[in-house]
Structures are given as C-alpha cells and as structure tokens.
Image 1 (cartoon, rainbow, N blue to C red):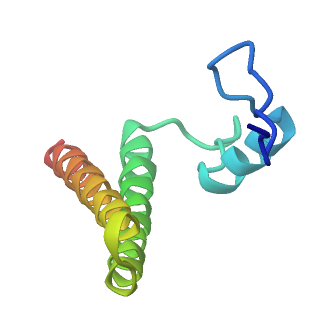
Image 2: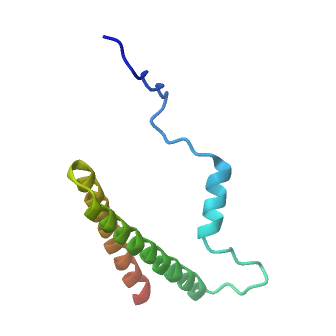
Image 3: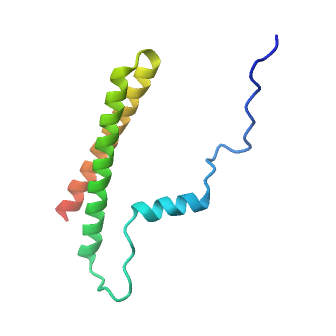
Length: 107
C-alpha cells in the first residue's frame, strides 16, 4: 500500500518549542508595567494590579467561552463535542479566576 501523506517529523522532546522573542512580547503586552524606583512601594498597589489583571483575565475567558459556544452551535459531531469541551474548560478556568478574585478582594 502506498501512503499518500508522509509521516510527520519525529520530535526529540515533548516539551513545547517557544520563540523567546514572541513570548517576551506577549508577556510585555499582557503583564502590568513594573514600578520604577521613584514610585512608593505599597502592598496595596500590588493587590490593585493583581485585581485588575484578574478582572481582565475573567473578561477574556468570558469572551472565549461565548465564542466557543457560538462556534459549537454551528458544528456537528466530534467537532461540536470538541467546541463544547473547550467551552467547559473555559468555564472551569473562569470559576477559578473568579475565586482568586474573591480572595484578593477579601484581603
């Protein structure tokens, strides 16, 4: 029997391969800007930035969950199951972020 498609290349490692420049740009985009030495160091500023970061993460998760739900409605079979499984994982992550946000607000 002749194979139509070749075998994929074998990876020597199961660890993901990241381009360091891409990771650095992404982290700089989404993480808060570090304070300079001129700004006073107060722990409440850490909690404010952490709280704001959690709120933004929660918004992203809500949008991703809504997108997965809309996509799942248009699909059928295994693709539909995959879309709704993604939505379920996003909902679980949303619950964890909401709980983290509650813990930050208690402090």
